[in-house]
Image 1 (tube, rainbow, N blue to C red):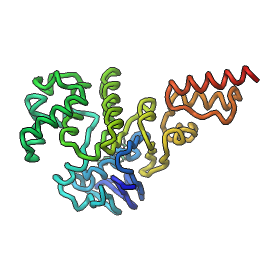
Image 2 (image 1 turned 30 degrees about the vertical axis):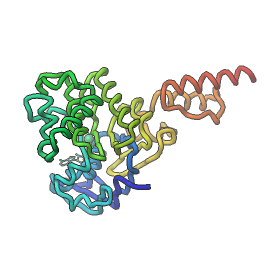
Image 3 (image 1 turned 180 degrees about the vertical axis):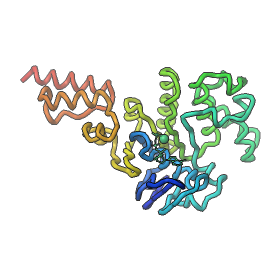
Length: 289
Ligand SMILES: Nc1ncnc2c1ncn2[C@@H]1O[C@H](COP(=O)(O)OP(=O)(O)OP(=O)(O)O)[C@@H](O)[C@H]1O
Ligand SMILES: [Mg+2]
């Protein structure tokens, strides 16, 4: 088994802050898996992924202890170019990343800087544009398109560089419902291809849980819980107390169990479809009793 990310006893305090934002974090992320990150505001989710991307400590001042490794290389010792080839970052606000006049130039810019040959640039451009469904936007200005389209362009820019680790920090938080769905479609395609380690901070657990191999709860600057989604969402009260909602289907079947409407061994669903299936089965077997 090989790890994309290994974090050992990481502690981080931003300059001028009283408390540590990250407190003795230990974490391993297996290569080519999907990690979903949840947690209430200000508990350290962005700080955690910033430590993986190298923004912490390279772009911030503060106290740093412990070690973060990306494919065995120590992040603190890597320069910006080395980090950019390993880790791609997508933020909630895509516009902050744009510099070019057209979407195509935006995508090509990074590739030219990396010194790729023209045919390779073309291939990567086409691949990234197809996955993110932005072929029709290539001639447009990145400022003249909708919020959801901007976010897909930002994702395409990261994909074009093809880093093995892709981090998204609340990628759907600033866009409309249809736009959100398209972002999750991209995540689904990337997961199915299985060629990237995907780390996604997202409050929409209904969409996130079915994609995640592991779910991680960040609470008070630490990894409070990490487990596959089905196991992760079993204790709704525990998660609710830490500001995290559970998928509605999970919560509903948990309620059916608590009220003895279904047998205690009934498995917990994480998608609506599973929830319907489990409920129908349970009710059918109850009628046959
Ligand atoms: N650039 C910064 N300078 C100083 N303190 C910061 C900075 N960024 C975050 N913090 C502090 O570090 C702690 C963790 O913040 P962080 O942004 O990592 O949390 P988060 O879980 O991503 O929150 P949110 O859900 O609001 O995005 C908070 O106390 C926050 O105020
Ligand atoms: Mg954040």
